[in-house]
Image: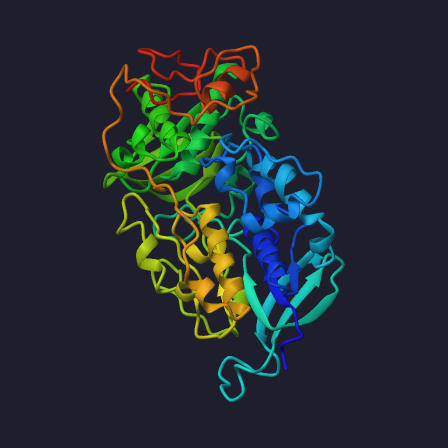
Length: 476
């Protein structure tokens, strides 16, 4: 009785739109519900951040097939896009495709998912009952849509982790909200005036935190008085800063090496391991106190950036039977493959419908939300997930089991940095039409650096200028 109903897809980000494209390729009808006003709402929030992976890993094949029916111009597959470029050059054209556009509902915030006429406890007839999706529009109107299956690609961007090392807000964090920002603020662009000349504490021990730290150091070059302190909640600095050529996504390895050089040059104060306990608004700004390597510590700042990762919003799933790992909050079959406590490099084998299945038949969590609290997600992994799930929903079980994806190693290993003077280039092949057309460039990162007026990214040099975008040719 549910065969004529659409398949609900929650979220119109890269994985959600890829899911819709795969469903269309299987002659299935999607219903895409997106809380934002357009495609890629969450990506726009970090549109200034450059991706670690090149375009060839960021475009889904079913989506590409739709786009190639139009006058779409494919980007250079080896170039590293900004988040905003993913939206402008890929997601917006995809969402505008006539075959897909009529199935999109923007400004539709999903608030709950259930089985029509059944609560979570009811078992009889459950597998045959359609899903009911409750959502509201921006005018406050409340709606209900029925669906044959549900693919939750709503992501994790709206659920940042708080500052506390215990996973909770620290005392005073909420009261200081006007001075605290989460994620990766655009400190060189839209938020420049907020951070220029300020004392900034960046809390976090991942690559999002490094991105913020390096942007603040670049801000310091033109805004004297800007001072950056980096607080890592766990003492994993060596693991985080190692990498370079050992990372199969060189742009990510370069971040660690750049931070290493900033620390050695004395431009960056590092607290590790640091556990914040209290934030107090005082005459000298924010007083942050806590424990630094088991000793009491306190400092004064004007702004705090909390880049401690993200977590899935599980509230809308209260009436759906889901199975999640108690620690990672990912499906139990996937959790041990991505648990950062077990994998220093985060290599994740491709996985699909079988690993993402829940006790609720026809319900799937995909994309970054499927990884729970693990930080190692790649878009290409999400594309393989929804390819497999679309095949499973269509009844093509053999296709659902087949692997169509070979991933690069996804994490920075804990190896030592590359020695000074190392040969080779690290930023991926130079683009065919570099952004600095009059300059000789050796890689994508080198092109980016020269386009910004710098001498280059430092590949293969003994002592690259401090102001360049750091690469892999020099050690700390």
